[in-house]
Amino acid sequence: MSGQPNTRLADLFGLAGWSKGELARLVNRQAAAMGHPQLSTDTSRVRRWIDRGEIPRDPVPRVLAALFTERLGRVVTMEDLGLVRHGRAGKRPSAGGAEHPDGVPWAPGRTAAVLTEFTGMDLMLNRRGLVGAGAALAAGSALSSAMQDWLRTDPLLSAGAPVAGQPLLHADSAGFDRYEAAPVGAEEVDELEASVEVFRAWDAARGGGLQRKAVVGQLNEVGGMLAYHHPPHLQRRLWGVAANLAVLAGWMSHDIGLEPTAQKYFVIAAHAAREGGDRPRAGEALSRAARQMVHIGRPDEALDLMKLVRSGSGDDLLPRTRAMFHTIEAWAQAAMGKGQAMRRTLGQAEDLFVSGRNDLEPPVWMQTFRDEDLYGMQALAYRTLAEFEPGAAAHAQHYAQKALALRVDGRERSKIFDHLSMASACFIADDPEQAAEYARSALGAMGSNSSRRTWDRLREMYRLTARYADHPGIGVLRDEIRQALPKPRKGGAAGGVRTASA
Image 1 (cartoon, one colour):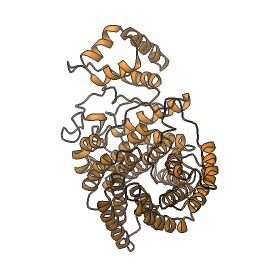
Image 2 (spheres, rainbow, N blue to C red):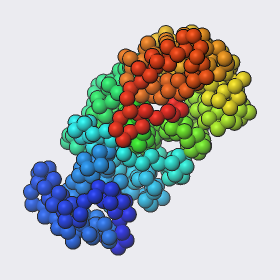
Image 3 (cartoon, rainbow, N blue to C red):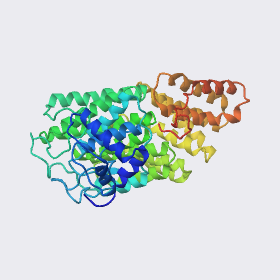
Image 4 (spheres, helix red, strand yellow):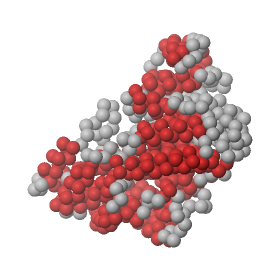
């Protein structure tokens, strides 16, 4: 018991709208449903949890997480409720021991438990049809501040951990849909790694909506596997699988507008990558959060995150990975109207990309960043800058055309983004006829894609058509777009116009 109020629990309790007596009764009922009929909670205990910071014993934190998740319609974890005990064996005070804003970073040894708990809650929301969109999105500056020291330190691979072949006995048994910790072999890890590539290809072709639940379920199972400490070479590979699946779960969540959920997965991915000793992968996971920040109109916070990515990714970054990071930074600069800085950063990206052509084979998570992806990000940056400097539209058209000429591998979502970048640049450059052609190409492909980000970009392009509303053919195009746009969700931002990512 800390003696201090649990402000996290108090805030969420206020949002839920329960009385203390009502919450006590719900805890008893939910605990019985989860196989703990002996639990007896009363109003005075709820008061101590909130007002005096008392942390109840298991299974109460898990029960509370389930109740708040269902009540608020979004994933709420024990960390979110401030109900995780600190000072466990194996925890280093200097490595994330203090409590940080937004629950990151957490203590070493907690990553598998956090991963499993969060995915289990996410799956529960999926089953019950809840949207999970009501959480607050942490500011990029707060996120980078919380993770600064954590990402710079060396990965914790073995200190304080059980020996191989033993389950992680000090890890919380939190989580829904988590099976018992058990060892896996190299062949099973091979299959898991192959499944990541299948999911990644599906996401690139069809968007994140259709397979997100499958990815989250697979990640939940991997969390169960990680609760058993395998030989180091297998454990590192499992952490790599977890990092890749968490990035995918985050990207798919971002793709359908579940922004706070996406951010949490990106942070989990960074933790998992670093647990496996892969600091470049941890940095790339956080760079996804930076792209997300630009998408929702917070480019200054994206730059805060990219500073952390650069400083914390280690010295093993391949030139092409650094080039990719530069394109994200350039896009954020463009969104702030910083044309000179954007051009300088894109120039650095080009130099790095070319210098990496004879490198060793990149890791699997970098193999999709090819020439067309560099061109696509350059087109996006210039198209974004064209809102401030209309002359940049010509450069956006140039790079979008180069990207489209190379889009032959079935990554339909990227092709849609390139078409929309091209159409927007043409409208800005006063070429409505060509703009309409590219707009219709994008519109024709969007019906088979579950990416909400493509609709966000279409709305941005639609805004540019207003000045040509009386132009022959553009009025018809505007009608077609209005008919095709999905209707806003109740209480959501589905209809809001935002800057979107490629």
